[in-house]
Image (tube, rainbow over the protein chains, first blue to last red):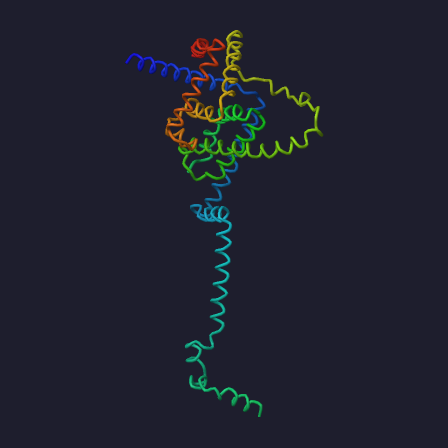
Length: 133
Length: 196
């Protein structure tokens, strides 16, 4: 019991000393040279300028969604470039499908020729022959 | 989201302590200044959207990470410097000393004897702090100087709460032993009272 008490007292004394040291360190931190204080002030000014710029950018895109996406893309460059590539390929495929619409139902129904004309394999050669004549 | 004024107030409040902490850790005032300035900028640029209440923990984490980056760069630089050291010997930085460096913002009305005693005590404390192993010093500073609790210190250091307690206990015993060796245990209390 006594040993425990002594240990506890020792611990409290050490903690008290640590707090006193911290307090002295705090005091010491307030005695920096003019040059150091000036450099710290410059650093702070730069940080505040960057912060203000960030806030202004956030205002432009309402809640900063665009900058959030941009930050995500910067951090995940590989995934972001993969996504862009996938988008390019899929848009190319879609455009190809749209251009190649001769076989689509809308084209067949909207054409001047009846749909049977497209099924008849001999129709196009005969049409060409008539054009040549 | 914190306003620029809130950020400014926060940085003004912590910058001196942060500088001293880094100076003890890297033992080079120029490098310490670079680390603090970089950390300020990172906080402003990356965490502008965070509320000001989260800034103390964020700033400490940024400081620690920037310091680790510094050590990594230093390691690579030292390798090259040691290889090329024979080419650049005999240069002294005495000529570059700026008179502004020696001007101290102190309390001029204070008794010169107290000032002298304080400066000597502080030198011994700073030496003792520098002698501590890095993890112990980090734990001591976060726990007692930054006044974080054990859980916060553990989160900051990326270790368990038990490890923090061990680091703190060892740091306290080492500091106490070093200060007792210099006959300082009573002086600290006296100095603290003279401040009040």
